[in-house]
Amino acid sequence: MPPVAVRRSKRLTPLPALGPLYLVGIAICGALAVEALADGRYRDPMLLPLAVLFAAAYIGLRQGVYLAGDQLILRFGLGRTVIGMSQVREFTIRPQPGRAAKRLLHLELLDGTQVPTSVGVSRNLFSPVVRMPFEKLVALVEQLDEHRRQSH
Image 1 (cartoon, rainbow, N blue to C red):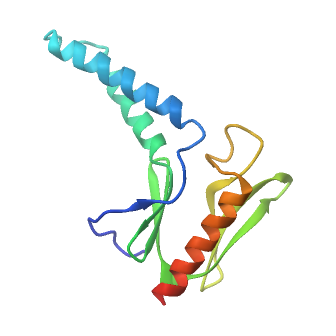
Image 2 (cartoon, rainbow, N blue to C red):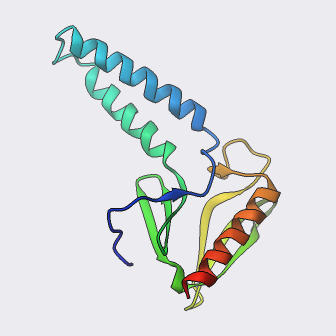
């Protein structure tokens, strides 16, 4: 995997399906932590769970597809996958096996590897992580494909 240099990345996908809940969690945890620290309660047992919840909400909020120069960054949970646009053969929208109503964005690399993403179309609120209308998903594929052609 190519290293990710410190530079600005552009988010290509909307917030995750639970994005508003993550934002509320960040706000509540931040407010409670600031209140505890302002009162001088530095050893309050509530601070550790608040820090964990704050980090989990922030990590959940960052999930999606990002573009940084000629690199595509797929962020999911605690991990991320960085793929150079020159390594991508094509972007496709495929149904998930066994679930015809759920279609996900897939990347096919030059070596034939299929990389599924957490971006897709579904009727289920919580799956996939980043839900988009089908038309916007098609527009995202076209945008990524155009950027891939320009990077070659």
